[in-house]
Image (cartoon, rainbow, N blue to C red; front, side, top):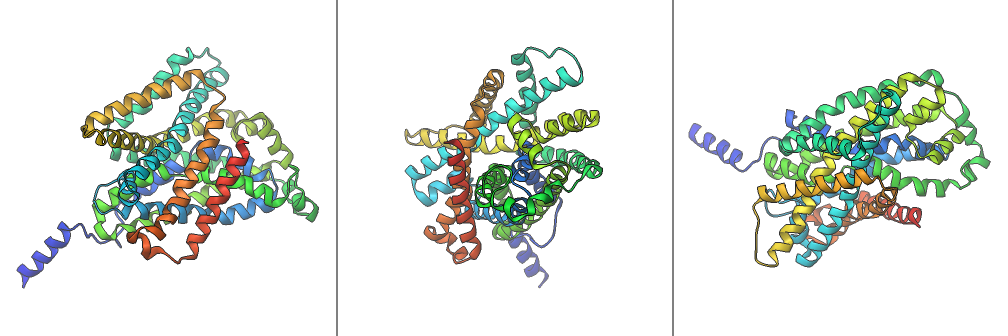
Length: 435
């Protein structure tokens, strides 16, 4: 009887069916890694975009944030887990479900949804450090090309240690980022005022301070919410890792980890947003938007607070570094998928280690060139990436539910309709903002 029990336990362990109800250290690391990818430089612009229309749009966005973020990323995670092969990332699952041609096209879209954001972060990282050296340290910054190269090499040196190290590094960076963000939100409490409550009048609801109606304001704010809470680049690696760890129970465990990560995101970020908005007026936020600066820079100038001047670069540096690492995983996955699929059409293959080196070199050189040139076109590229992110994150998994047999068990849920509607809103608003 003991032998039978031992054999049963061994068979269960061999099949990867670990107890998903037990919370492990690896689950905490991934939860913080998901948080670290999502909560980056976009959060530093969110108070401006979310609060500029007044209090009511801000409250509605707060209520939408958790379901919009959770349901969309859970759908993408389920899509990756629906593949037949263990260890298969999103590029392989797409090809399995939609065929080689469609799979190749979607893989290209996946790459171009993430890669431009990686370039944006390389520019933002260089600008942040350059500004800190010039304005806070009152020193002459090194030549931009040299500074960009040193910074990007420094961040990418972390990547050489592998995916698990990247996730752990991001989870460690989360703590100082959240701590400083929350301390800053608390620091602003004495500056809270009731100006924002003036927007509660019916007249201001119909025509807020920015000259547009409530629905129009919400419509344009949805893509900002998607970008600020987006961590789709790391979802594929997350799903693959948890499938290896929990086998057929991976979906339940992934949903639980995602739920905790998203609750943490919404609570911390929206507290920071509300604290910033309550400290300023809609007119102040409109001025900050016109100046095209982060909320931290505006707060430092508005209150003439040296403390914020020194804290702001630290927050920005940590936020950008975290997001750069998370987006690198997704960009590498997409680039590798494109190369592998292109080679397979010619009957050729390449070793994963060699391909990762080629990808790293491509990312390094391209990020360095763009960071050195510092083109203003990057914000447009980022806006163009918004619709692609929404298509892959919101629309593709919902389409797969109705077309892929392995996804049919998720059909008929009200959350599916919610994800499709918010996805279409995000796509239309992002396209409109570019036009």
